[in-house]
Length: 338
Image 1 (cartoon, rainbow, N blue to C red):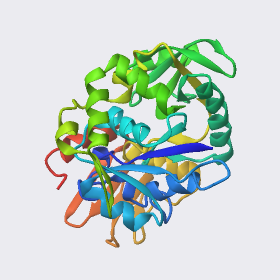
Image 2: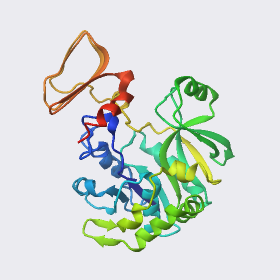
Image 3: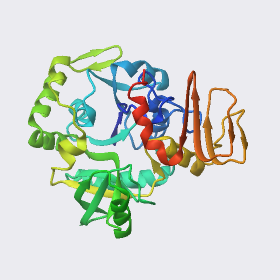
Image 4: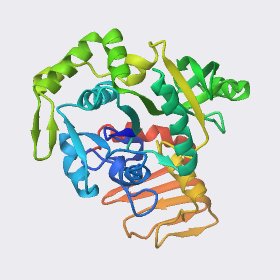
């Protein structure tokens, strides 16, 4: 049986003003009535395949986890230290030979069966001692994602040749044309002990601090609380930088699962279009306008003479943006996230 680990650390700054520090992207119903977090749990609800998920979240969001999940095993991070330490906390709390499926809580996956097929392929490699990431087959020269270059064939997967940062458009186009690159989804499968061994090899200080935080932590009503002072010694680092880019055990399973990280308003609009959801909030009026999405709180929104725009109304905040400027919203959120 596979042990899912659901990470609830995303802030979703590119989805301001709807996503804020006290109600970040995972806990918003952006695609249907259930939130992205709840949809993640729904995806993992088959108890013949998956154990009850372990959820890793910060103290500020434990009440949202409790509101939106009936049963949960919760690890409460003493501080935000990115994904490497969050995954390590979960790995240190389960059986050493457990196969972990690492799932961000704020992604959308349209094809459940394709997702399960990819998990099955990754599980086989993980049992052989591989650290497996899911690579998404690109459908365009996307500059908002990191990429993975596929190396030699490894069964139904590939060795990882290298991880690359978010590219400029020309580089992304070259990656797309080569056929050798996939998007880095941020989803992983590996044995708990394999991951912890590789973390100790490449980030020994982090591994030691995590083990100390777990050993001296406490189980409370609202979840397991690692010891704060030990955890505070950890430098924030993603799992990609800390382990995946350095290990010799990395493999990538290519997956066409209808994936989106819903990383900005344009990505949400694309996902809504693909899923057949309406793009206009109730009460929206448009005249001579096309390719428009509106998100509002029962406020009347009118769009006239504009194409490829998104309008978001949340309380007293109003955001109007062109689709191709969606990445820049994070600059607004920096001082308006409260």
